[in-house]
Length: 51
Image (cartoon, rainbow, N blue to C red):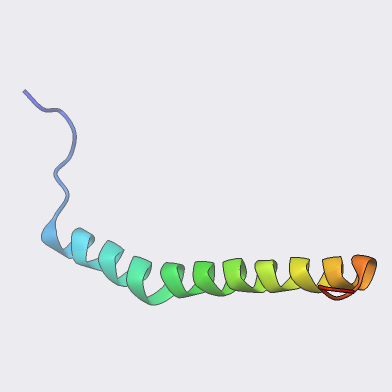
């Protein structure tokens, strides 16, 4: 016997919409922005590549 509540189709669709419309783009922007910021800071401290 499974005592856990069943996930309804509406809950599943709501979770999918949240993940694809909000969470994935926000995480992508944060990751790319963080990488760009870290490269920018490293170039301020160490100079551009090849110098």
